[in-house]
Length: 343
Ligand SMILES: Nc1ncnc2c1ncn2[C@@H]1O[C@H](COP(=O)(O)OP(=O)(O)OP(=O)(O)O)[C@@H](O)[C@H]1O
Ligand SMILES: [Mg+2]
Image (cartoon, rainbow, N blue to C red; front, side, top):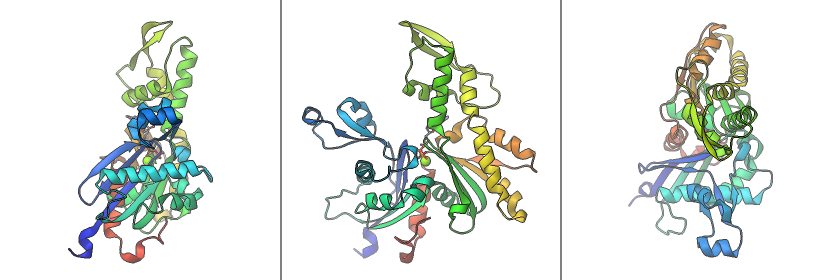
């Protein structure tokens, strides 16, 4: 077998809530970005494992020291636990596409890892440390750049990736984006959940619900603007299951995303050279789980109407757009591109 037969290219989207992998052997997987270690010897005896990942970690959370290592887009400064969690998460997704760390026959892995833009800017060194040893060749890029690459939206485009922890913006100008071309907002899915939770708590003080339930409701009913469907949920109130109409709260929580996204979008567009601004305005793509908020694209388009119009579209595959883009990058990269490149 020649050298190249042993190469496996992978794109990994390392997100706050989900991590996805797309490999050149055709395998694609997504896991919840949770990592947990058994808290004590009782937990260890029950779980019989040194570390649990994803859904399994969530289900056994009472027995675990549970982490979402990229929470708020950062590996917390100097936190060895978070670094170890990222490492374990990456090993896990690689195992899912057939790469076992201790397999002497394992292929040479060339990995492009997309992370929230802010994590890249602030904790680049921690990230590199955490990623050490998981792949033979490595490229760390910002998530929205990976999405742009996968869509071949490389020039005069704007990608807005609405995730759980952060909303990441990236203007593509036909070259690697710099810090100037990118922005990160803390306002994203998690912030909507918090807002919805507090609005519901205010309106129905005796209703019993958890953040997890609130997130599920949001994912089912999310919208901005107008709707004809009512968002109806059943919750216990003083122990009695009660039907509540939460349409207005859902709208208010989701709409809280619009002004900050709009502001950042317009600011980035205004920094593009004047003759290209119209092109960029007509090539805006929403990615990430939050892009599924019904009516969001139209709301942004409407606001663009005031400054000469624009077009906002959604990626087709919100789950794998970043990982697929990373894989496309890995496949196109030549030897000189690896390791040294960080955008
Ligand atoms: N239908 C939906 N409507 C609104 N929000 C949704 C919907 N589906 C998922 N989400 C939200 O999208 C977010 C997850 O998106 P995604 O998987 O892109 O995040 P991530 O990549 O893990 O996070 P980040 O990019 O911040 O690191 C969560 O807040 C989730 O609740
Ligand atoms: Mg993401």
